[in-house]
Each structure stands twice: as structure tokens, then as C-alpha cells.
Amino acid sequence: MAAGGSYRSARPPRIWLPQDVDSLCEVYETALRSAPPQLSDAFVAGEVTNLRNIYLPNTHTMVIGAVGAVYGFISLSENQIMGLFVHPKAQRRGYGRKLMAWAKSRHPTLQVEVFAENQPAIAFYTAQSYEVIADSHHPETNLPLVQLRWAAGNPS
Image 1: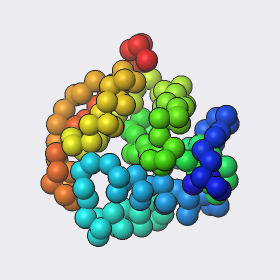
Image 2: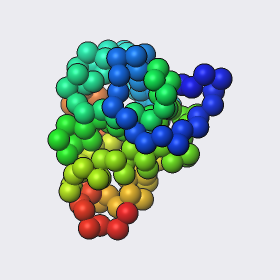
Image 3: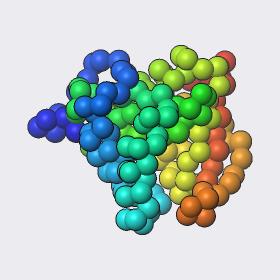
Image 4: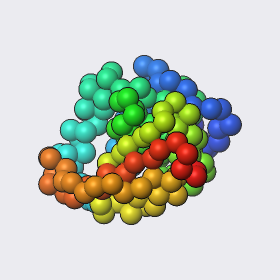
């Protein structure tokens, strides 16, 4: 989070830096805890550890915010969005759309999975011209997932 709680950034997305890791983990944990479904503390703690040790080293992650004061990020593995998270206090300021525009400018198709209970995330993706393509279940929690896909040429 930005010093003093200010979430202003006219800067485009940038690649994450080692100095961003603590801030990325804060954004991720806060977003996981604030969005439906309610996830167990153990699951969230494990996911934050995975972000630090597995996801960041193995994905292409772009952030919005100053070094060490990230507001949001998107992580991609090829055309699969592994996560797009914006700190709840920084939401509805266009950061998610900026991160999405960056991803769309680099891939002709994108796919993402979200928890079916997370209607705000599904609404965000459908507003970005994503279409629901399948349902599945999260392997660790057995909670229902929705798979969405975007293709260049769809209105955005």
C-alpha cells in the first residue's frame, strides 16, 4: 500500500522488483481475505507463501504503484491469468483495467479462473469482454470455479 494510504498512479504497469515482494504479499492477502468466498486462514497463509516462493518466480508479473508500494498486480503464465489483484482500498480507480489492458496488448487470447462466489470478479471480467467457457472445482478447496476467456476482436 502507498505511504499515507494514497493510491494515485498515472504510471503504466511495470515489472515487479524484489523490493515489491512484501507489498505484493500484502495486496494478495488483503484481496483474498476481502473477496468471496471466505477462505480459511491456513489456505490464505499458504497462498501468500506460494506467491513469494512459487508464483512470482514462475510468472510474468506486472504491478501498479511505486517500488515497495504496490496497489495491484497481474500474473501471467503465457495467456493464462494466474491472478489479478488490486488492494481493496485501491479498487474502482482503474488499476485493474490498466493491468488488463497491458495483458490484452500482449496476447490475442486470455483465460482466467475465478471462484464462482466471487461475483465482483466475474462482473469485472465480463465487463472486459470475457465470456464464461466452463465450470470446474478448485482442487484444494473443492469450491466451484468459473473459467472465462477473452479473444482479440471482442469489444472491450
